[in-house]
Image (cartoon, rainbow, N blue to C red; front, side, top):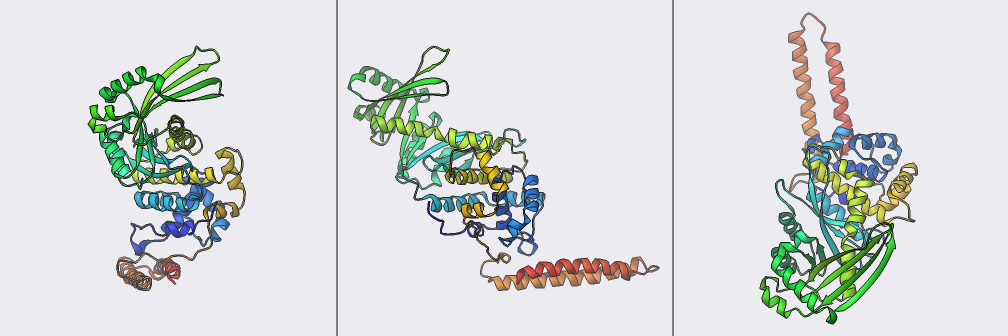
Amino acid sequence: MQKAKYSLIEILGEISDRRKPNQIIYEQRHVLLIVIIAVLCGMKCCLHIAYFAMRRKEWFKKLNIHKIPSHDTIGRVLNLTHFSELEAALTLWLEELLKDKHIRKRIAIDAKKVDKKSPNTTTFVRAFLTDIKMVIGGQKIPAYSNEITAIPQLIKKLNLKGYLVTIDAIGTQTKIADLLISKKADYLLPVKKNQKALYDDILLYVQSEKNDAEVFETHDSGHGRIERRRFYAFKTVKWLTERHPRWKHIKSFGLLESYRKRHNDSLSKTSRLFISSRKLYAKEFLENIRSHWTIENNLHWPLNQAFDENKIRSRSTGFIVNFSSILSFCLAVLANFKQSQISFNLQKIMLSTGGLDPISKMLCLRPYPCVRPVPFSGQTHEECASSCYRANLMRVAFFFVSTYNWCRITWQEYKPIPIFLVFFYTESKLFFSYNQRLR
């Protein structure tokens, strides 16, 4: 596995910050880095993340992070971060790191509820690279809607050229198929009775022409069951495209028969039909169909079992989508850095009890100087720092005058000077400690 061109903290620094530049105490990229490291070490909520960071201050000092935010600050930063920018930054960094492992261009798209126990339940559609176990895009499903409206929005923002995209039966829609072809991708879709005319025609043809099909068969045993899968592939599609011109891109189709037997159960049989815009052999059909379900085994299940994604509790949608994006990023990092067949939970325990070096190697971290406040467009960092300094100086001067007048008018019978000095000392200390970061 090759080393990433840029450190993760540099990539996080490219995300725009919605907060006012002259009121920033904790840098956004530092907060996001603290969250990522804490999640890799097994922390599952803002309170745990803040406590973990306080206990590992020495780790973060090596990365020039000298101030640890509270759990409320962590929650606010995650809520205000742009989801699209955070997702793009994490995805680009992972793609650069894992590009030597990315060989088979297959993408599985499926939906999952993120926070089942939250009062603000959120459902995501994700695009998952099955060979490197990495999420490359996500789309929140709007309330009172379903995957049919969210899948096209997800496809539009992805670069799918040359990929074979698999979706479950709800994605077997002509609009989705045409959109994938326009993005220069191919599709592999199951056909069920939501496309009744197409389903009936293919089923009738397959049953009558089984003897002329290309057949491939596999046998599996494990988890208390024995399973045999047999696929019948057909490439004679001219009659099908003539009867269904809206599915003009079909190049191959077939039938999958699965026979399953458990210890004490009778033999069960299921049959499913599939279509594809790519000419596939029976073996390729079966491999791609099996790879689609890795999104359940290698993404949805670990996110719930190892990272408790289905137990996120927040009323803020911004926090939920951003924290979920960080969870899927950390899952991809752990999955691709596994040295042996150990569980994700044990791997996180090993990281939390070890030093900073293993995490630094994973995330390509190195000490990096603090960033000054983000300048406005057309403004240099020096001009931004100077304006912040002047603004804080005026703030202290205003506080000096207003506090002294208030003490003089309200408490004429007392000596206001000691109280005034306490207030002025506190404000001045904050002023100088903040402006020291600008140099």
